[in-house]
Image (cartoon, rainbow, N blue to C red; front, side, top):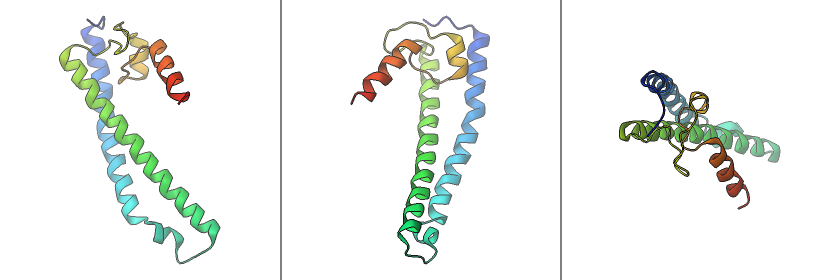
Length: 126
């Protein structure tokens, strides 16, 4: 069971509640940009290799930003589900309570700092 107080849980839920509409807007704007700023429009009739490279980079950055926002929104949904089932604030790897300071900085954290660092180190070796 989590060691968070009701006040702490409410504060963390509020942070996520405030972040959700911002992410939804950023995702909508990103999707709109992808449709409006199509690869052909970015080239503006040029066929220079440098322009094509820049157009490709801009498209990739827009896609990456939108993807990152979508993942963060999914993390909020998952954190809310953990709140509902009573597992929020508990590390999914070691079952230890995640410190409030970590959750306040990163409300959707699903791992304690030690397990997150181990997870990232493992992923970087792939």
